[in-house]
Image (cartoon, rainbow, N blue to C red; front, side, top):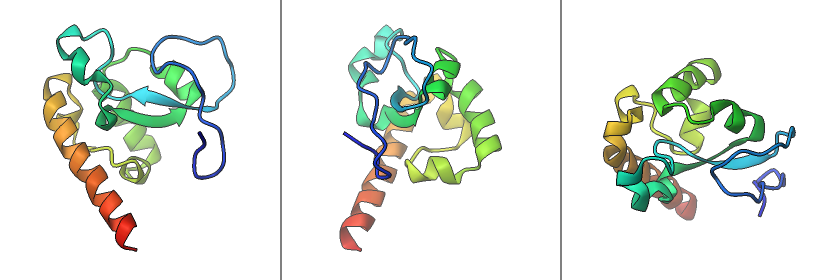
Length: 119
């Protein structure tokens, strides 16, 4: 599997650590990780996944989403997140708003797919 630019996506589990020092793209759980047992059934929901660089993924580790996403949005701008249909509303990045985050992101993904299909 590869990204649109042809760069391979790392083939490793989305959680856990890796001794690799490269920055190959990896899949990241955005809001809820495997450690939040009350939401485990929804952890691997496609709306909770994003493609990011390996070094960034390892730097984020188990931080809460609002603590790592908000500084990244400020630093890199909203366009990078909009390209992956990731909501940037700070309230939606709170773990207690996970189900609302999923609803909003699913809608954004659907909108982007429909737009792509009609172009």
